[in-house]
Length: 299
Image (cartoon, rainbow, N blue to C red; front, side, top):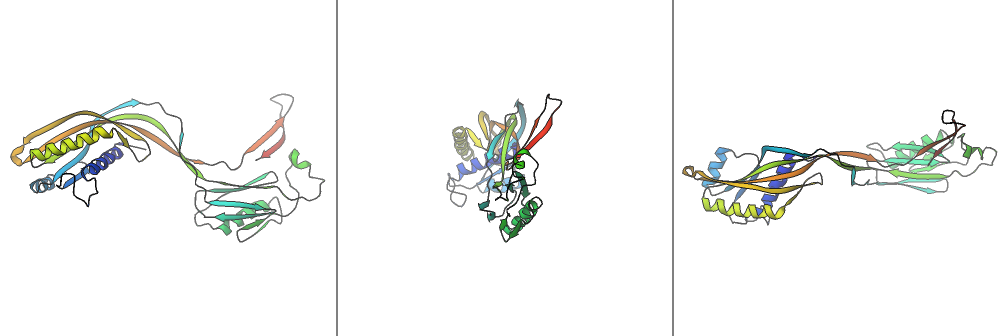
């Protein structure tokens, strides 16, 4: 979730990009060196740098903060599952393919029965096939695996639901096999919106240096308006004011504070498992309090 430190760092990045449009290995926009950071200046470093005409620009989160809204938003998908495994059915065989990564679930539905395995770190295609074969073999004896291939023999389903009773007196049949792979996505919701005032301070050894940098940064921040944050939300910038100060000119220190209110979201993030199997219990009866089970449908 975004907090004031992430907003501060995003502001630092925006300021650095303004002062060094070609990158920090290239000359700055003024041709003079800058030090851009979050936090408060170290007095000893500041004295040395100002004497060398190196300007400091720092971002400080002030204590001025207010809550704008505490209404929780609906969950929104931020990242879809990235499935790297595959299950391919050919007749009575299932081949495990792709690349092993976690977290992922692999599943087989065989003649109305479901089998799910959570892939483990360090697993292989062969080990996944081995586990699936072991799970299926409980209900379908003779199910085996060789390498990354699972083989399900012909046979009757042992389920007692009404669909499978059809097969009780039937000849052995090829099992109906349905493969599934499910990954994990990410969703996010807003839990509150806050507004915090951030102070951007320019520290220079000459008043003309300070004024030039102040004008450049103020223009860049006004043009920015919106600040992208690491949790894929954004902060809205609003200019509050500026405070130039020549009070320390005897020490060759000229300063100006730019104040911006940033409204941003505090968010909550969760991991969402992709559904691979659903189970529906069907019941009936003369009344709601006199039900009896009829079938369990696995899909």
